Image (cartoon, rainbow, N blue to C red; front, side, top):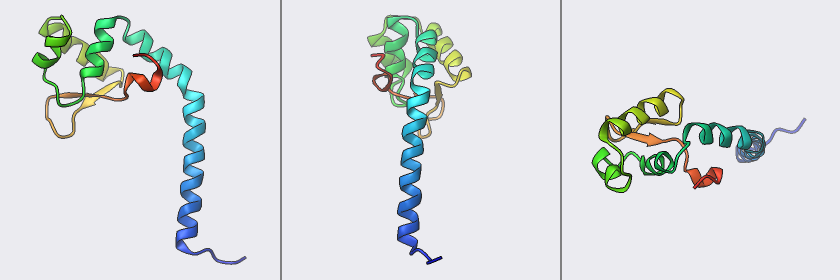
Length: 107
């Protein structure tokens, strides 16, 4: 069996990973969309989630979404528990959404 060059092997692996990613997205789209719809069950929650980008503060989000600080903090706690937000890597204490809702056709 002929030995492949390293670039050929890498390209082959990347092509297979791309194909796997395609199929994972196809089979997980509907369940993921349902998961997010169930959790983000109001316009306010969806708007607050979209603004949760790791840069916006609670005050900045509240300027655009009319909810109390305690409400937003409670949502973040719930969303982190169900895995749709995480702590922002560059801003300790701030939350960052896992995915843009446009990717799930929810915005």
